[in-house]
Amino acid sequence: MNQTRIHQNVSLKKYHTFAMEVKADYFVEAQTIEDIINGYQTFPDLPKMFLGGGSNVIFVNDFHGLIIHNKLMGRKILKETSEYVIAKIGAGENWHRLVLWAVSQNLGGIENLALIPGSVGASPVQNIGAYGVEVKDVIQEVEVFNLHTQKLETLTNQDCQFGYRDSIFKRDLKGKVLITNVTFKFNKAKHHTFNTDYKGLSEALESVRQIDVEVVSKAVIKIRQSKLPDPQSHPNSGSFFKNPVVDEDLMKNILANHPNIPSFDLGNNKFKIPAAWLIDQAGLKGVKNETETLGTNPTQPLVLIHYGGATGDELREFIDFIRTTVDNKFGVTLETEVNLV
Ligand code: EPU
Image (cartoon, rainbow, N blue to C red; front, side, top):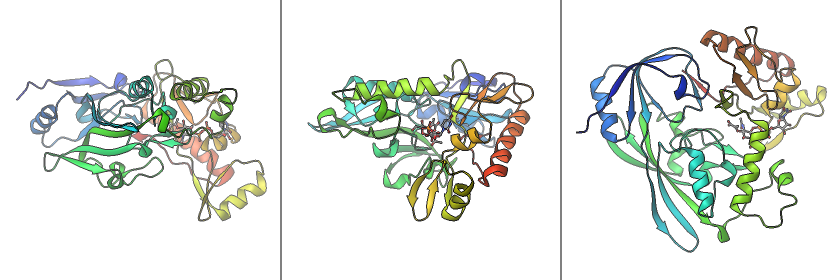
């Protein structure tokens, strides 16, 4: 068995992109499955939490338990044909670096998902998506360590029950498994169908004569950089709320008063509305809380920025304020996309 170092009283600020000043009682960097097992066996009765890139979780309180930081690395090509490549990637790998690698190999599938913060292991959990592509479109299998049986298991794409920012890992398997590897199917560029219809992306590519993975990834990077703040300089967790889905009656009601509201018809009398639009039209674009420790991003208000020194209570109050203001104006309740711990 290898030596697993367990650290005590560790600041979590640099381990989540919202950068709240909170601490964990115990913390382990898991580079191997043994590190995870050792952590478990050392603290059988304490609460435990797995952490990847920390871009979709916000610690609002000190964590009285063990944080297991997923640092399981590796990039293995399992199969290559003239049409595609199957690659198994360690869950602790950085997501954007994987995108850059795929682009450098001229492999298609995740070029629209460039610059999404977080780790490879976190990508299936909330089925990350951007510019008309979701990671479920390229995932073949997800390998997990079952904490109950202490064995590795493999879930097929179907088993993962992917939905909009949703999967089985957020529901039935929450807290029961740790994602260890994700297997992707990437297309060789010649056999790849690009997804460039998304408003904004199609405009950015209008003057491009020859579309390829690099061109698309660069366009996505440019759009994201122009709208979304860099977590390094402006701590944030990406989209803070989900885009709400409303039924036809409510949609009609809102349209009567706000004929310009953008919406996306999902079928079955359901409509998705951009939360950014609701927050913007509620007058909350670029606003700050009283202590100026938190604010909505001035270029894409769906992103909340932590300007430093915010307490968990201040964050909760700010979230409540945004939700109540939007609810009072439109009758739509926003749900957080990030997990508050
Ligand atoms: N809008 C405004 N005011 C603004 C910004 C946007 O009214 O200041 C309206 C516009 O009508 C715009 C619409 O909101 O067309 C949608 O905005 P955008 O295209 O920026 O996308 P989004 O729906 O807000 C989603 C994802 C993002 C992803 C983008 C691009 C969710 C919750 N968010 O945002 O994902 O990058 O689409 O595909 O689905 C993330 O999950 O962390 C994330 C950043």
